Amino acid sequence: MTEQTKFLLDESKLPKAWYNINADMPTPPQPVLHPGTLEPVTPDFLAVLFPMALILQEISTERYIEIPEPVREIYKLWRPTPFIRARRLEQALDTPAHIYFKYEGVSPVGSHKPNTAVPQAFYNKEAGTKALTTETGAGQWGSALAMACSFFDMALEVYMVKESYHQKPYRRIMIESYGAQVYASPSNRTQYGRSLLAEDVDAPGSLGIAISEAVEAAATSDGAKKYSLGSVLNHVLMHQTVIGQETLLQFEMADEYPDVIVGCTGGGSNFAGFAFPFIHKNLTEGKSTRVIAAEPAASPSLTKGVYTFDYGDTAQMAPVVKMHTLGHTFIPPGIHAGGLRYHGMAPQVSALVDGGYVEARAVKQRDTFQAALTFLRAEGIIPAPESTHAIKVAIDEALAAKAGGEKRVVAFNLSGHGHFDMAAYESYLHGNLEDYEYPAEAVEEALQHLPRVA
Ligand SMILES: *Cc1c(COP(=O)(O)O)cnc(C)c1O
Image 1: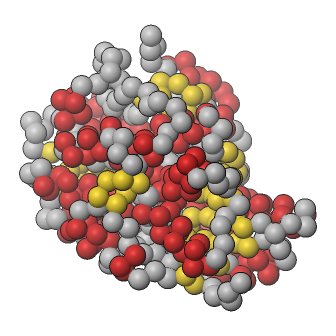
Image 2 (image 1 turned 90 degrees about the vertical axis):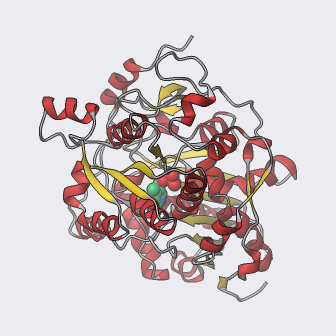
């Protein structure tokens, strides 16, 4: 066993292709439905929003899809990312488990999100797109896409949930620094936004509403603008698989293989990017790594949602997909992990949970911050509030190994750093952070509005 702590790959080891789990999915994909007709969508409906290269990736069943060279060149600004044995955390927990983490916080914007922002901007540029529209909650996705658009000299309109726009100005300023336009959502720039403002000028907004505005802005632009989504879709999850592919090589360097891997799930992209290459080994090479999706107890789509067809957005403009959902009208409580506040889940992740290939676990906000402090006081890195959910579950696994007196190799994805989230840490440190109970009634109400798919 090596005494090494940090496993770094040379740039030449940067993956040359993305891994497409559609080639190995144990269950056939469910159709994507048109939000108006609830019939399977045609490519021309999707072509209003996305360039053809991404539509083809969305439905492809090729196992590997080559990463274009200009995208790999940009990936090299921060990839391959480090893989670290958390020896000091192991000592702090006094566990026989070996704990590893993959660190995606080293990207310029501090999260995994540029792994898909860059190729999405690239394919749009190639297709002649002049401008993109998107939504952002706390601003992680908006800042990643703003950076990518600046690299490819494309304009970007970001609809940012109004509450965050006012309460979390620094990511907004970051987005503006990269040259993009940011609008507080609901805004008066779209028909849907205006209709909501007419009801309530102070409407705080939500991710589902911001998605609706960004989709409307692209769909009504006569082809001038396309729309970009930072999670949920198959092509987005696939772009993130550089994470897990690198991790497989780094585990070889460490001469170990994981018993358990963990990722946090908002829309499912960092989890999928980390886990899918391991699930590939489970499905095709007889490996038996346990794979755990960690989600917030306040927005628990995988553990409490229904696996059924639902709209991707609040205004029913986005496609209808089969996923674990809390209902498209459900607005999750205001937990600090803004990136985990989504009513649905990626269809691929949902299908794998439904089939028993992935476990899901819901964790409470205060427990995740407690786990974060244990982690950061041992390893130094201040995690994003989203990532703390994976840390909590990884620590629980390491403690279970200790209780059982067994060696267990546990790895988690540290999806981003928390440098813009210090207000959340301040609340926790001062005892002001709440735990939200599972909003059973609100979910029950929202589930009344599911589309009636024949
Ligand atoms: C956006 C975000 C998430 C959640 O999104 P996924 O698509 O589920 O990965 C998790 N961690 C960080 C740091 C994020 O920025």
